[in-house]
Image 1 (cartoon, rainbow, N blue to C red):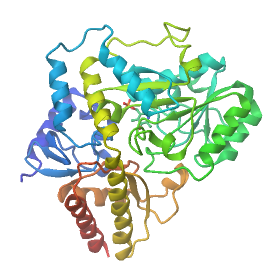
Image 2 (image 1 turned 120 degrees about the horizontal axis):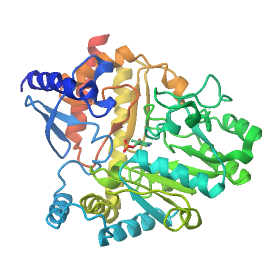
Image 3 (image 1 turned 180 degrees about the vertical axis):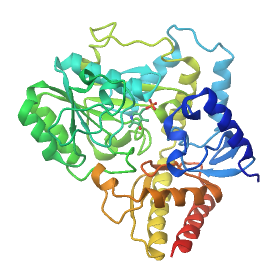
Image 4 (image 1 turned 90 degrees about the horizontal axis):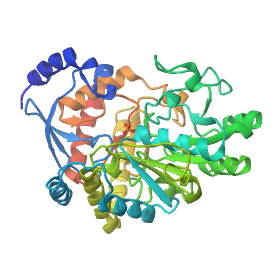
Length: 430
Ligand SMILES: *Cc1c(COP(=O)(O)O)cnc(C)c1O
């Protein structure tokens, strides 16, 4: 076990050549006042950094590694695909197999298009919804993340009735003017928009379990209510299942809650760690996508053979083992309930939200059901906790509003180690 010398040196060099030293802001560790750990290798539920420190990995590449790192069957399929060339820019059998499998696993999806990231999947699904309905406006929920395309970089205006104001420099106001913000778990905030301009709304996009403001499950009736409003006004319901797809179960959140959205977006698990996204849904809607219809969407590397090999291998294993989900969800349920108990034992009545393998310990005593309540968390306390956990060899997302991802590779002993490290932190705080 070393210190952080190599990581620190790498970060110095990285900061000279890469904005902020990282290729995605969530990796920066800035919000916990620390330096990114540069990862050298991973196996099952473990990570090793460049300084030789070992960590129990509670991120799993932000979701994709549901089977853990280095699954032998996946590696074999990928290695085999590599030997036949890295990309052709032409149709392949693997793409057909992938499309067929996704449609079989997720019944609301009758046709699917592969892309290279979750961002691309959502951006394309929204274009498709607009093309199909001939309408421009969309509704998104404050605190839900749908990738970094221009029109979706909107948290909220000052109130639910305001049209979107961009969250990022470089996004013209014109790009977010058709993005309406609503409050998660609050159907009335959605109805207000529809009462005002229901005939102009193409779609509602929602994370069926919000997992980018910690973890916020939908209240009973919320998703059903969205579907009802959409049906009433001829708008489409888009489930962004980039995190929940193939995670809550093989048929995602829509299977879990028994809802049939019009369109669905995938990412993360579908690529098993390779850069993959996908969007799909009802046949008549997907038929507006080029070259069949007038909605243009393309990708030089889309359906890449190596990426397809990895994704197909992972999805096939998951399909063959429904028992894996049962065990994962049960183990995770026990784990998150134990977190609640541990924290309470030391006198902290903090909120722990969880569903399936996704969970979040919020440093607040308030019930967390939307962005406003999530924001009541004490992020300074979270930072101290997170640094403690890293020192104890537990790799958590370095930000309060991220989920923890239990994988099928975590052992009971490893989850107990995580709990022990937590207990160590909270016992010291009393
Ligand atoms: C991660 C994520 C995205 C964006 O996916 P990228 O592959 O990072 O572009 C979109 N939607 C949700 C719900 C996500 O969690």
